[in-house]
Image (cartoon, rainbow, N blue to C red; front, side, top):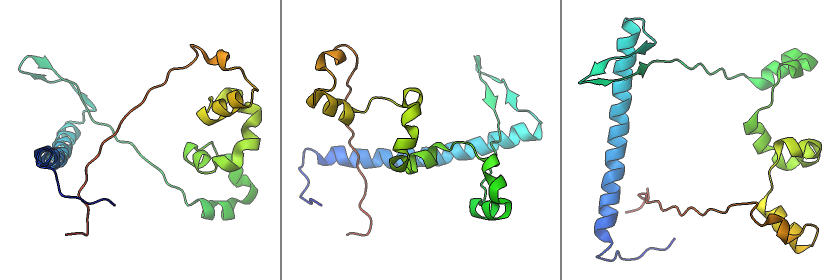
Length: 156
């Protein structure tokens, strides 16, 4: 980690950035409390959707409950044995986790579920298996620069 004295011209930028982060967190917490109050209000009136008019502005307030079920997969698998697989559906998170092991299995359906990968495109052009000209006008390239500032915990 590179640690250096803060340049005087950038110090106010960093201070304001940290101040905004703090304000964002406070606003997020306040918004959560307001959402809870609204949910209680709608719940008491047994409303899922409410369209109040606030100072001439029509609003739409919705209250929804999303239920998430988390299964003990090992326990179910041991109890159900071969019947367990009849309950399964593709899980994108697990597919991503095990993608390196799934390459050969997915090959027959890559035209349905795959996209060109920049490393594979570069390699194919370099080894001559596809012509570079085939890509003219066939892609867009965007670049996104990300800057983040965080307080380092556990240091003075």
